[in-house]
Amino acid sequence: MESMTYTYRIHPDIDQEVKMLGWLEQCRRVYNYALRQRKDWINSRRCRVDACSFRQEYIIPADEPYPDYYKQQNALTEAKKNIPEFKAVHSQVLQDALKRLDRAFKMRQERQFGFPRFKKVGRYRSFVFPQFKSNPVTGWQIKLPKIGILPIVLHRAIPDGFVVKQVRVLFKASGWYAQLILQSEISIPEPMPHGEPLGIDWGISSFVATSSGELIDNPRFYIQSQSKLKWLQRRLSKKQRGSKSYQALAKKISLLHEKIGNQRQDFHYKTSHHLCRTAGMIFAEDLNILGLSKGMLAKHVLDGAPGQFLNILAWVCRKTGTYFSQVDAKGSSQLCPECGADVPKDLSVRIHSCPECHIVMPRDVASGKIIVNRGIAAVEGLAVKLGVEEDS
Figure 1 (tube, rainbow, N blue to C red):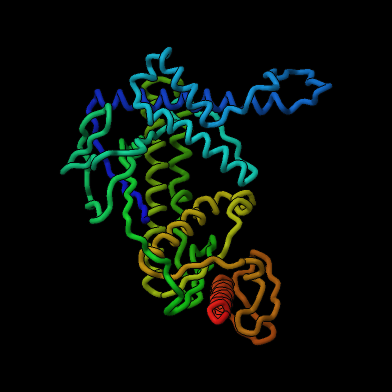
Figure 2 (figure 1 turned 30 degrees about the vertical axis):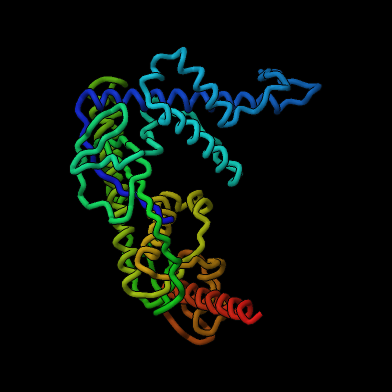
């Protein structure tokens, strides 16, 4: 089973837009109510049996079960009988708000951080139609249940053999978008190691340094637009909150943030395709993104978005048949790629100069060579292991 997502621009009329905005608000209400219900149950189990807090305590009967997705889904069915606003929303769209909250709690349990937060007005920006009996896209139109037919900009055709399984309607500062989740029965095998190996080192001064010596400049899209953002936000702080001028200026800021995100994503895709054209195997660092985003260079790390880049690179490698793997990054900038000697250096030193073999090269390129060596060693070890298993 192969899945992928295509995003298209849609143009609803005024009535359809009002209806979709209302749906987003009702989904936000369901999400926040379900989150409050879960938080209250968790907080009621925190105190000791023989001692309570001096400030406040959540009192919920001890035999009250945990409000998981299925219990909240049953409660939503009863709530729709008493709340007329819920009846106007597609039933599966409201259920998806509960599924989204349930996924957030499961992800928090796996990562041990990131407790779900309440959504403010305007912060819930998408809803999902989880299933369709037939293809909703016909020609240059898309038909959504209870909303109607909307014009859609099919800037690229849906691939043959793929069917539309889900549709996510997304509201951005620039307008409305439909994300089509496409599925096919075709099963594409994972790329096997082959061709020229390439190691890449992500950095701040250079966005990517490869083991072949190529340095790709860091465009720093956020840093370039930071002065304009400061100017707009300073003007926004002087406006009366909720006024028309405040809303117009807030939209300008949102559009600028969206533009920065689009520029960064486009750069990541182009860089990934460029790397895949030059190698058959690509090895990258297994970065601790969370730790990097909390240091003194957090703004520059988040501007480069290494997590998004590695995800896009992995997808492009799979699409182009390029083998991709991540290796341990520990000490990759402190070793010599030629002789393996330990060459300690702090972050300000950008040139690798080995006192043993006297090789001199940019620090990031040396790190890329260490990464490709580790990647090749991992591939050879995997090949030996598979050979032993086949013999046995």
